[in-house]
Image 1 (cartoon, rainbow, N blue to C red):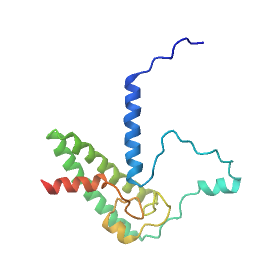
Image 2 (image 1 turned 135 degrees about the vertical axis):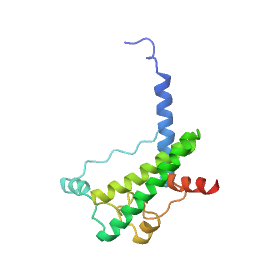
Image 3 (image 1 turned 180 degrees about the horizontal axis):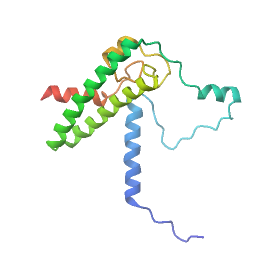
Image 4 (image 1 turned 30 degrees about the vertical axis):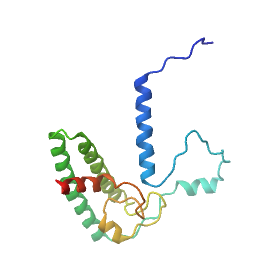
Length: 164
């Protein structure tokens, strides 16, 4: 038995704390609350039929090929703009905007990957199809509706760029 508690690495604790803050902010952006130190009751394992149903991919949205190609072109153009802005911010030593710029590029890359996988236009929260009008307005969107909270990284990049 140990007579004293094991020593903790303060850097690891700090890293985990910052990761929790980032995760909490990400969840809050989507309107999901995270309770501290509250565990949900353990539920019984689902039946094999329900377990299989939960592993099936979402039903694909019927978006025509021309629409997907136009969305891909918009996203590629948006990505090039964001990479350019992020490079400018990095050169000017604007770390905050450079970080947000990298996050924005990741959002656009995620949307491009969804087009490739065939699940573009599916809400990540509900699994419902995202309206075509919403996809046209915000090609990188991941949700059926805008949730309350701060704007995402792509919108922040555009707001900051316009304010200059």
